[in-house]
Image (tube, rainbow, N blue to C red; front, top):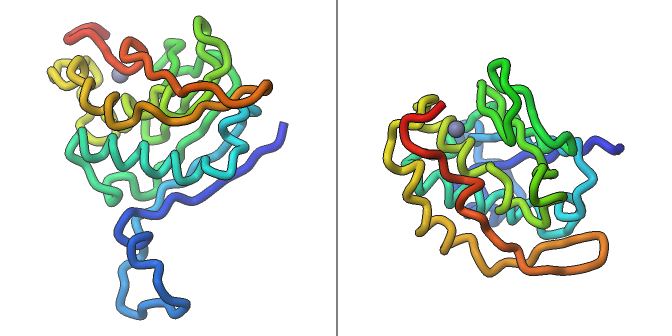
Length: 175
Ligand SMILES: [Zn+2]
């Protein structure tokens, strides 16, 4: 399996990527890094970096965070059906690093980044709340609407990128 990494630069810098010279007075950009330990076709598409960026942006907007909050955060996509999280197995985890499966045990290999639990784990990165007491864990319809209607990818070709709210949500107050 190949192992690829891409750097994700915050929205401000991207919006300003309009010249070749480095602004001398700029602070270092807020940067998260994504690493693929996954052969899911969506991770190999030309649109992946842009989709990853826009999904994170939508999640940041939803949870009230900024790219600054993700400075130095590593996001690891894995083919393993679960990741270890505080001694338990889960679809995703945030413990300073975000780890996500691209192979949901019930759905199979996911066809797009929007289907992963990334927006949920961004939530933990922004608000913490490991016990899921915030009502927003169950109110993700607007976020789903924003990220729906995109293309998914399988080894056989393109499919709709369907979003399953049940994957993102978490019943309030349950571990
Ligand atoms: Zn959670």
